[in-house]
Length: 175
DNA sequence: CCCTGATTCGC
DNA sequence: GCGAATCAGG
Image (cartoon, rainbow, N blue to C red; front, side, top):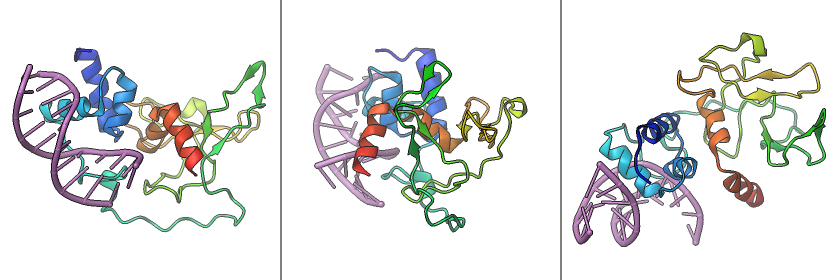
């Protein structure tokens, strides 16, 4: 594979969103994470604050205390039941759904911004379009947090959106 | 051992 | 310029 302008642009976008080199490599396909890192350096893109760890730039930042939540509120991101359907279309069993009221995921150092709960009609080019809530109920909304101009998602949801399915399954199996 | 980015160096 | 091998670290 060669570095076409298109692939370079995708690399820049995903790197700016904070995806790891291996995740970007999986998105691009045909390249290793070393290739991605090497290219990042040759492009003189800003590196991560500190090497090591998936939390990278967030490590030094102080994390706000987790907001109060019901004791029985599930801690991790939920997975749709396999039998769930919307109309005639069955949702894939590997679709992960961010918990609507949870603004903090304890298993990760990433700070999850509190959803602005925008309706579809309130979304703009620069708001996160990650769907939240239940599509069958009237609590359905979108994340709505500020996203970069190039991305449909905020930094946190970009991580979920671009995480390879195999990695998600691996992470779920480990949890 | 899993993962992360950084660097080196033969190609 | 490219990226595998390697290093240093969480």
